[in-house]
Length: 279
Image (tube, rainbow, N blue to C red; front, top):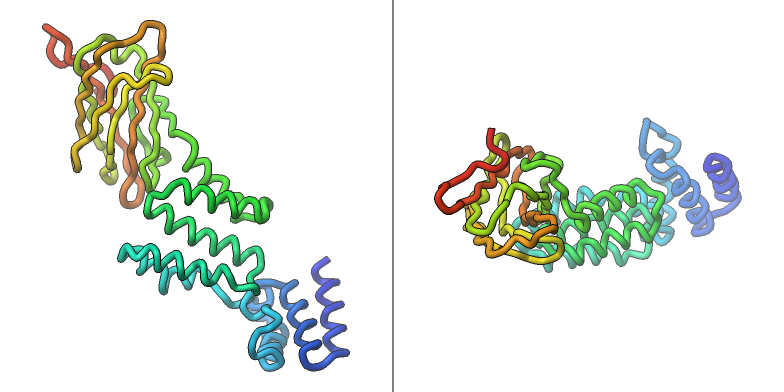
């Protein structure tokens, strides 16, 4: 148990001096982790103060493990670099801290989390996914690994829309692959208009829309910058295959957006026909 091992380390420290005492004090405080600095534990703070005097260069590494905060590094230095698009400098900053041999698993995983953030902001999704896998491989039982699994699913799995609408849980900070079954909605070849109509919250950004039949691409159109409508020219609709839309979309702001996906066929002699999403 940690308490028993802590007491054993303190007993060894009491019988030692100099670097040997610092090693055992460090071991005791490492076992306590954050508790060494919380809840007014003055005896533990006194031990940390003694450790600082015995080991001013932090050769044991306990001082870094207890006091270095990746979140403070991010707020003070990393976020400003990313906001200024200085991504190479941001990665170099994180990588320098990752190389410190005093890091424990908690620090390494959280620093990798910052590395993931830099790649995600650049929409380098393959690199971002690999960082998440590193976190999981390091120790799959930690809270950070559990978060990494969730983010990895978000990066690698398509967002399946069960109706012609989007909701906050569908939004990502990067262009994600939305998939919407439109079998029976787009019923004949010709022109088809797709509109993304925001109902609430922030705007979304849609890059392109592809009409698929199984794994076959039937039609593709880019959405104009800042636009919300696109027209697809459908030359054929293979019989017996499910038709679905592949939509590259991402959220903005606080990801509170909701909206409808309006699908209209332009059919000869009938003009614009309402098909889905409109009430």
